[in-house]
Image (cartoon, rainbow, N blue to C red; front, side):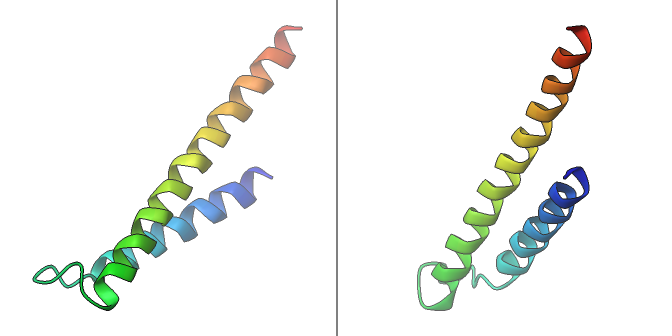
Length: 67
């Protein structure tokens, strides 16, 4: 499970970088630039949620060890 989460995290970071490079900063809200911006924001949200999941799993393991 841990390897799968790291794999998803790497994919989301790649998608965030890829979509950020597709944004035309002279007109960020026109055409494909807006789509790329939304997708980059979505990938950033996924990255944050996966990091929260990793931290949650580490806390859960420590609580189980103490019991």
